[in-house]
Image 1: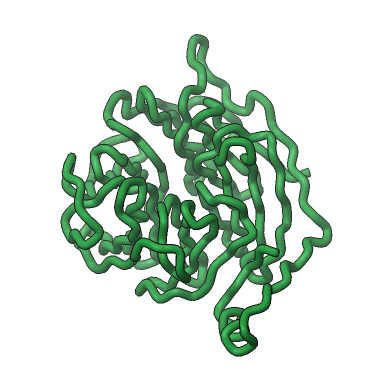
Image 2: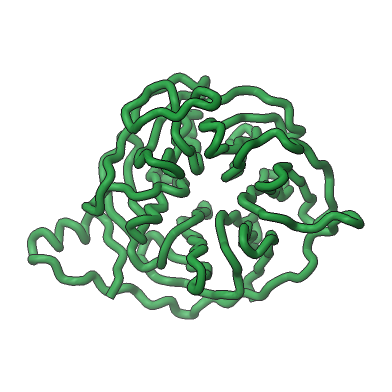
Length: 303
């Protein structure tokens, strides 16, 4: 049985010679329904390879298209508000919105995480443009996949959509602070850290895609635990109440798993997604999934 393990569970396993930790059962289980045509795309415009999605404090939905690259911003009712970033990215990967409302985009080919205003004006970039750094570099990234933000403005980059297997920490002005992560399958080791989020307690959840689990760290990189009952994690989103949303884009087993990080309970699991890559959740618990192979951003709402 796959299980959720926190620090108490890990201690118990160490003392009791490793037995599986039971997964709490959701009661009642959540169910979701797909909302068709939620986005009002202009005539002649269609979804393409959609690699990222994010939601701002006003409920506006930012969608990131990989090829050809662009950002489309929709109102909560699906009206297209603006488009920007056409052709500005080599291999766009993820999009996030920080606590100040600025927009961040990672580019795994330019090896940068870039900050923009909501209207697309460039503000800052992490990493050296076009330069791939190794796992010890303090100046360059290598295939940055995703990023998360601390309340004080610190930035945590999942640097793993290439050969690196680490998390890199910067201050709010973009100055390098620290890094951690080694390649491997042991507790806290990483194989393709593909997505990252932070909960209200300041804990970081890293989608350890190659090891098929989610690692949990504090902000110094200390390993706290892991979640192993969420299939193969591609994209992560987390709600203020600690609900974790995990998108699995594995061909043949795509799906979305919703978990309670406090108990390890699987609250919901559903399919009907093709090539899920990244995920975002709004204040009403609607789930938006960016799909690369499915060439769509799908919306699912709780029943």
